[in-house]
Length: 300
Image (cartoon, rainbow, N blue to C red; front, side, top):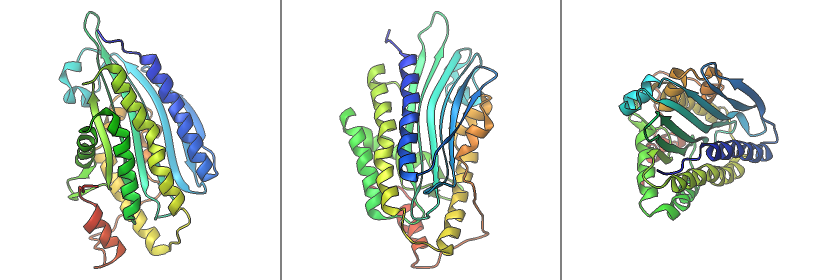
């Protein structure tokens, strides 16, 4: 039986939250506010939110560790063998909504799940990834994003980036819009095919690699000039983020069904968004380029 070290995973996740927040505060100039919470059914977390900062209009970096005796319906539907087991789920999840429309919104998540039953082997896996949602994309930024993802995956096998990049394109897709949420990145779930220590190392690399992928883009675009047109398009495209998270995101559904803290689960929502009936970007515009050149799977 493999040694599964839950305490080591939890310690890493809490330190990762600290590290990411510190790096983001250094770039933004503002500070995260922390809100500690307890879950009545078992567990709790630390929610950290930044508002009206120098760079980020709103963002959250959350750590949670929840446990219980009954699996949420969304989990047993996905993995019926989990029924009748005690479970623990822990992770760090973040979403950042910048002020400047030329800085992409971004999301990252790394998590660990274990379900146990006396007399039986535990069922465990890691999951996570990160993705980029630009409003006014730059080719070089998207290339840097994916080059960083490739470098993270490389030590774990030449097939890993290709597989987890494709998984991201497939997962962060809005069927009712027939478009990807952004330009993708990495996504993986149910990762237990390697030894526990190797899976853990991969999760660490993805979690620590997020700021390497994202912050150079933030620093490059933070002073880019914009006007009301760009702002309104940013708010319109934020609506897609809301649609995905409320309709399709498995993490949101798991959190709500497991009795998680609603404020922390929905911290991924943008502070402002808008919808416009039958919007069509002008031919040849920067807005049209987003749809034509970026909102579809692409080989970077």
